[in-house]
Structure formats: C-alpha cells, structure tokens
Image (cartoon, rainbow, N blue to C red; front, side, top):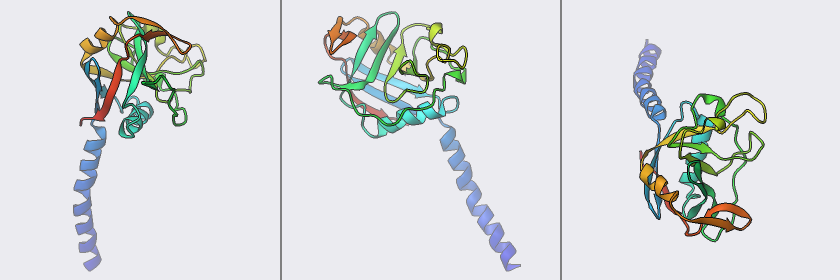
Length: 193
C-alpha cells in the first residue's frame, strides 16, 4: 500500500512538469537582429525545421552573429549574412548540418533560409532573407541540383529594414560580389521569447 501511494504521489508531481516542458518546446522562438539599419524580428519554425532552427539558435546564443555583416545583397533576390565580421574576416563555424529543404516551407518573400555551397548538406552559420518568392530555391528532388535551400523561419517585423538593405550601393570586396559598400552590421542577435 505504501508503494502504491508513493507511486501515485510521484505520478501526480511529475505530470505537470512534463506538460509544461512540452508546451515550452512547441513554442517557436523569435530572434531579434539589431542592425545598423534597424531591427528585424524573425519567427523560427522548429516544428518543420528543427535542425536548422536549433543550429541558428546555437549561433545566436553563443553571440556568434554579433558584429557580423550582411555581406551579399542582391535587390529583388536576397540578403545574405552570418559569415563575416566587420573587418570582412570569415568566422570559424561548427560542423555543417543536414539540409531540411524538403520540409515544405517555401523560399517566399520574408522567409529566412540556410545558405550553403553546392553540396546539399553544407550549411553552417550563413543565412539569407528572401526579397521575393524564389521558387527556384525550393526543394524539388533529393539530388544535388534539386535539394534546394532550407527555410527555417520568416521575418515577422522589420521587413522594411531588409528592404532598406537593397537600396545600399554594392561592389566587390575580398573576392566577393554584391557586397554593400557601407557595412550593414548585425550589432546584436538575441532570442526574445
């Protein structure tokens, strides 16, 4: 009888904590990028892009994105950041992650996706924000040319700031094209909920 009562007490005291834990883990996180042009709020989608969202949050929580720049801005296409500091030095990154472009999230205006090389599973810290619906970047097949780029969230506030980036003059720098001539700096990246 004593074991039964103890078991019931244990069950009653642990159930609420499990329920709270599940509610918290299902709540998508928001990240605020404070840039030299203004604030951008990004809503992550950990349900459909758990690996990419967790990867992005790791870099945010480590302070990795602080004092980095948007190093590639192509009006009518996308703005890319997360790889270079303000001296245009490429930052050291963690191991590449699995490409989740087959998650059903489209590369549409305002969505944020992982940048990568021609190798599908090569994304690390760099990301881009789409200026328009870029269907050509979506997953079409599990082949090197069809994998696409993994969307893991979207801009929910501050798209005007992203649009302002496209108005900046660009040029060549450090072997890269479409680099803003005046640095667009991510002064701070932080989780806000």
